[in-house]
Image (cartoon, rainbow, N blue to C red; front, side, top):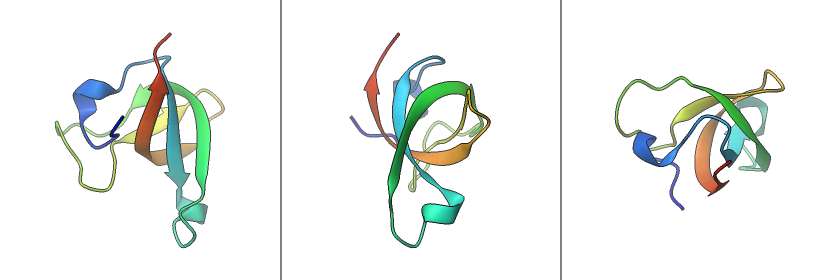
Length: 66
């Protein structure tokens, strides 16, 4: 599912994000959402989230809810 809509992303949900260091390649990293950092309802490049492992990235898609 699309990660550009904030309503689709839930705390503790599992998402795929592109980390800042991986932006040139677009490599996806999977993790569980700790914080939703984007305050707008949508973001064209993906809603920014924080993982429980302290990594930050722009959400490209969510994979499941917990």
